[in-house]
Every structure is written in C-alpha cells, then in structure tokens.
Image (cartoon, rainbow, N blue to C red):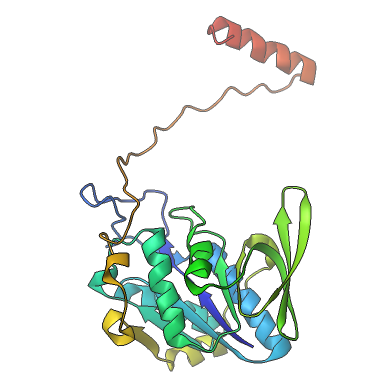
Length: 262
C-alpha cells in the first residue's frame, strides 16, 4: 500500500501579510506550520500503512523553508519526503498548484492512494485536492471520515449534509480528510532522531521534464485577486447576565430598539 500525502506549509499567524503587487502571501519572516488538516492526512496514511504495510511519501510545493514542514511529517513516521521548489512555481493559484503537484506525483509514481487535507487554512478554498484528481484522471473521495481498503478497492465513509455516505472506488484514488477522521500523533524522540538522518528530496520542473509552463506560476494561474484588505475589528456584543431567558430577550430587544436597529 503506497500512499502519497500532499501537505502545505502555512503561516502560523492571524495577521496574513500580502504582497500588494502580486496579491500573494509574503512568507518571509512569518512563522509557519504544517497545515492542520494535512496532519490528519498524514495520520490517516500512517494508520493505513500500519494495517496493510507499504510506504508513505509526503509531497509539498513551496520555497526551501517548506522542508521544515516535510521533516515534521517524517518525524511522525512518513518514509520519504519530496519538495517541489523552483522560481517557476512562484505565485501559483490552486489550479496551477494542483497541476504542479500532479506532475510531482507522476514523478514519484507507483502509488495506490493520495491523501490531502480538505483545505489549507491560509486560503480555505478546498480546490487543490479535487483538481489534482482531475489532472491524474483518478476517482476523488472527499471529506472522508473513515478510510479502509479491500483488495484493489478503497472503502470510504464521507461526511455529507444528511449524514454519512459510504463509497467504494477502485485504486488508485484521491481522498481528502478533515479533523473528524483522527487525532494526529505526536512525534516521539525516536521519530525525531530518525528524521534528522533522512534526506528531503528537492526537485523542480527541469528534474521532472515535459511540464507545461503555461500551467505554472502566475502566468498559469487563471485566478486574479482584485483587492485585498484587513477586516475591520468589530466591537464586542452586548452581554445580558443575571436575568432569565425571557428577561434577557426583552433587554436585548429594548437595546436594539433604542439604537433604531429594529
């Protein structure tokens, strides 16, 4: 069971800095972490490896500093790590990113399953995983809360508005997961020592070859951000304490009427 987990290094701050010219994130000097949903994806892959054997490879696209995020996944127990890093990838939107990662997956090859976090907390689009499956022409099983394998098939319970939907698809497949699927393990000292000795393989488009340059970077990104801004901080709301529910409602209604809100 060979599994590739796509992860992203994201800013660990509420104050996202944005380049006003390119409308892309400025990462220099901003503390970064592994995208939380991606840690759930790594945990899901490790549990499948423990159940069925095989190998877990973590893959990311980003600047050289993203190696730290990949090493954190190696500390958790992943077997290999690959970083796609090059100036030609800079400024990629979700479409371009999904194309680049799909080519990285083809470069790694020999996979049965791809697992991604359902979305990244810096953009919250939730588009990259699904778009990757289209580039690779494989089934996508999104919002998984349980993943299992039966021979050459993946069995997935996915969360939908009405409850849980159970799906079965022939391998290889791509799954996206959220926090409800598991609780990511904490790296042990042994895992950290092991990861220190491991190499993160760094590749670019030249290493892969035959990549379509019109689908990478800013020029390969159909998304255009027209405006960026910092949301204004709203004042704290009114609190009514020491009253019954009915009295609290009357107090709130009276305040809203006084302010001509209703």
